[in-house]
Length: 241
Ligand SMILES: [Zn+2]
Image (cartoon, rainbow, N blue to C red):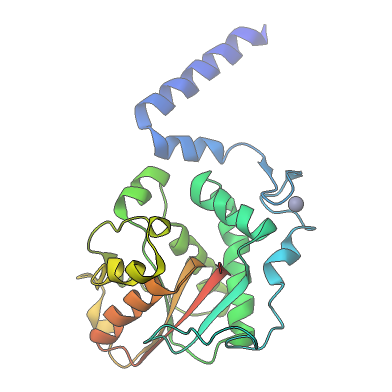
């Protein structure tokens, strides 16, 4: 008796997916039970056993760890991150970015809040690094914006969507280190919306998912400083080296 109803339900799902495309796909995926991005265990998007991986640097001293080059990209005042871009952290970021698993964002945003609360010198507001509009259309969300929303809630800091991309940049991993920075010059600008008025004299904190060379953060910080920011720091979920 229940078989025909099930078929009708599936037909409807297929129909909705076909009609509404990628965004509906993502929404429907959220109706399914999550499995842990770290270990595959069913239940939460990130299980209790895997969560500590996001906090491995929680007690680390702020700033550049001893033994690593002092590579704080100008004009950033501070750059912090929660964990190396490996293992559970890497898989969680990948699932948020490419598998539509937005239920990971609260876990990642909370880790950012914990690290910043311990290591952050100061700051008035969070500013997510914007993904390209094409990517946002494709995924139905901007992962850094979701991470910043949760971090802002926990840190009790406003989240300001001040930046926009001026053009699509070549995928960073296709470029050598030297041309990465050039690729990003003028890639970001302060948007015309709630933008400029909120920037003057403020200490802003950029939020991103993964930082590699820091060239993206430096380009964003440059745009904010040009628009009158007092200072710009940054915090990411992970750092890749
Ligand atoms: Zn797990």
